[in-house]
Image (cartoon, rainbow, N blue to C red):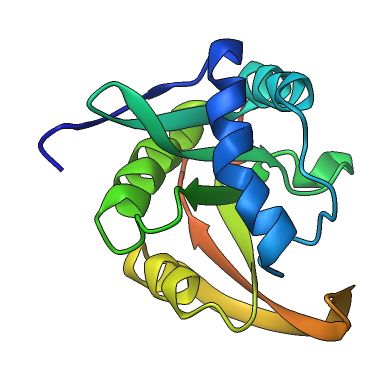
Length: 175
């Protein structure tokens, strides 16, 4: 981890993030997308998340090797203090501390912005993701059974959540 650094993403990181994400889309059921986003589409995602939540990248020797982001959990107003989070690392980089570094920074940033709860969905089986979320203090809250169809099979999605902020009620608007 000594050469690794977490920083805010910019639209200039879109190509690297798209390259990291594409194998997950094309070769796994970890994400239910079927077509990898282009760098231009990824740039829009980065810009959108950065305005209201956060998008961070992990660099190793100044090369982007992973990213994590937060976004709205649901669109209805009562959910505005909750967010959905996700993390992706270059294949072969799991269990190196990169996911933990990204999530630590991301959850801190979201809490600073006024968010109170983070939720994460994990397509099963995915022992690495389940282990990371458990290590980061996420608690299981349920599993959607056979919720997504990809690669000629039904897949379950487990959900976990973690409190990331506290404060007076009623809460202030997220910043």
